[in-house]
Image 1: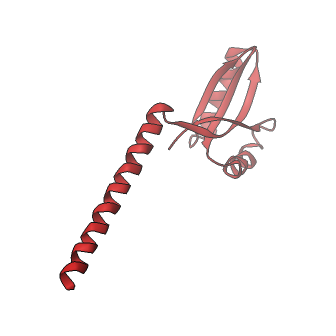
Image 2: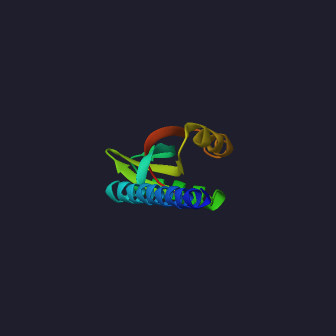
Image 3: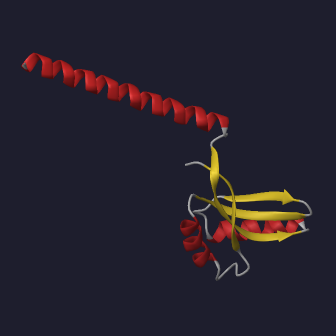
Length: 116
């Protein structure tokens, strides 16, 4: 009886390890297919037609809040500066409250973010 319980325990452990490996492989395949991006939120701190102004806003933000990734995009007809890679709207909202003193016109937008 003791020998059968040891064998059963090893079988369960092997099955668990196989399932974990399958899940890891699925996650890796998903990241490969989506280029490591997922749905999430960012904060738009600037949009306007002047590229140099967008760069200046991005540099000003990076100097004051170096903890966040910044992104400059062209969304016709505007140059847009976005910050952060937030999985939830609550995370984005907490950051929005921190930066609104310096960037009062910023707001949360939904988009594709980099998976961490």
